Structure formats: structure tokens, C-alpha cells
Length: 148
Image (tube, rainbow, N blue to C red; front, top):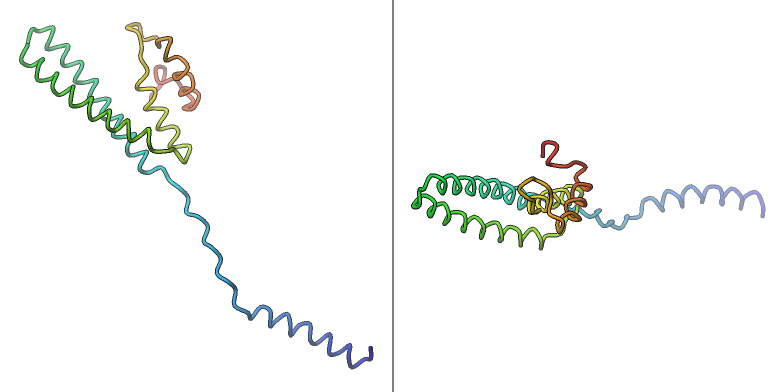
């Protein structure tokens, strides 16, 4: 290789490099959008609101019963039945909606905790203790001991 060939090689290298960068770059697939649990979180919020309403109605039904207000008790009983149907519909949707984020898992855990059966003393029934324990671990607290 003579000096002239060497010069051509040295000049060709940067020219080839520049030409390479001038080529069109194929479009890359956009990164997948982060999946969210917006629908699940909304369902869980609606369920928890319905749960508070159900609890309120049960308390009111008991008050009406103790006061001997049969008609009021019956009206509240009808409201309770409709509230339960609504909650069951929401619960079915929650069960069918997979959690994709930690927030979604936590929201489902709160719903599960609201369904745990307790004794009159407030202690968790034996059959629900495993679910209670798992949900407590997922949430990092015991709702009976601190604010939800």
C-alpha cells in the first residue's frame, strides 16, 4: 500500500461515517404506556363509599327496630337490599379487574378487609384470619388500630 492509497483510506473513513449517519433511522416502537389501575381504583372507591352507606343504613335499621318504628325499619330494609345488590355488582367488577400496580393491589386489599367477618368483640373470625393477615401485610397497617 502506498502513500496515496493510505490517504484515500483515511479520507474515506470519515466520509463513510458521515454517510452512515445520514441514512434514515427506522422508527422505533414507542415504549408501552404505563398501565394504570384508574378503573380499578375508581371501582374500589365506589365500593368503599357503598360500604360506609351500608353500615350507616344497618345502624339506622337497628335504631328503628329498637324504637319500634316498623314502617321506617321496613323502608330502611329495602334500601339495605338495594345497597347490597349494588355492592355485589361492584365487587364482581373488582374481582374481574386485574390489579396492575401496587396502588391497585392495595385498593383491592382494602376492599377485602371491609368484607372480613368479625365477632361482636371486634376480633376477626377464624375463617377470615388468613385473608385479614395478608391484607394487613399488603397495606402495612391494621385498620382497626390506625386510620384507613
